Amino acid sequence: MKKYTKDELSLIWIDSFLGLEYKHKLEIYKQVKNSEKISQGLALAKEYIENNVGESEYNTLLGSANQNYLDYVLTELDRKGIEAITIASNDYPESLANLELKPLVLYLKGDKKLLSQKAFAIVGSRKSLPISLSFAQNYAKKLSSHFTIVTGIAEGVDSETIKAVLENGGKVISVVAGGFDNIYPSCNQGLADQIAKNGLLLSEYPPKVAPKPYFFPIRNRIIAGLSQGVLVVSGGLKSGTLYTAEYAGEYGKDIFALPYNVGVKSGEGCNELIKRGAILTDNANDILEFYHLEDKEISVQLSDAEKEIIKALSDGQMHIEKLSAVLNKRTFEIMPTLSILEIKGVVAKGGNVYELVRKYSEE
Image (cartoon, rainbow, N blue to C red):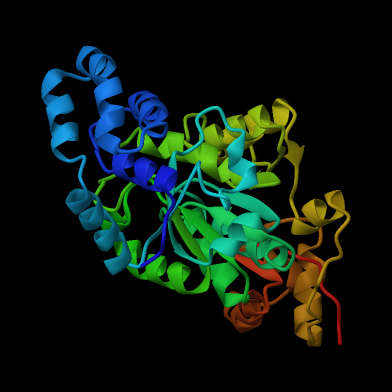
């Protein structure tokens, strides 16, 4: 079991009370940290707690201000393979230390060293077009060669980003909006387990906390705070991804967004961000060049048929029927070649529309 300092233990103890608001936890900690025992600090904070939280809540806190309760909390964390880093810890991430509402405690599963590495966030809507998910995968693969990728764990862009990073041998930090006992959506529990083994799973909530709707936009301040820049792959005008961009702007981080055609609901938020000054990007190389990084492009071997399709798509996306007409071939004749180009990561498919998603070089 990890050894914690007195101040760290005080914060872990306070944070275990799920009904306490952030501001109350912080105020109680200020009293407790200057006392030899937690119970002594509570006595000093009694008037504040009873006036702002309630008398019964004060009695609950006082009744739990003992070593047996604290040992129970620590044992549960250890049993679940969770480590805690607090604002009193020497290894609390510098990128979060100056946030106005910095998390009092961070709960971790995985490689905590990733918190000190150069990071970049990729976020997007749960309801994204297939081609948007393909773009998320492509950006994740390229950027993960240079950055630890930060994202959430929702379906859609988050999930596809995580899978692409792990498949590429990169590192990912997934910030969840609830405790580790309540991964949302539950279908991503297996993905969360993979992240814990090959990256870092992070939450500001104790394990038993179930996610609530307002946790998600609040969670996004951590994603933005940890990252040097943020890419918004998709999102409507009311999408939670815009909260991440807003936090990024507030923190002075770089904001990138993919452009969308007029009328695409899942891209209206991206277009709005670009209007406000976000950097337009339609290729991962845009971001690499912005940070003066080299594209670690994998060379691919192309057949004549593949080159012909790439040339046809060089001017932009194209429906399969139009592509067939341009190539003067039947649809079934070009489908196998298109599938191979998808596997090679050169072409992305959205419904029946195909588009180039990266530059390529031939061996």
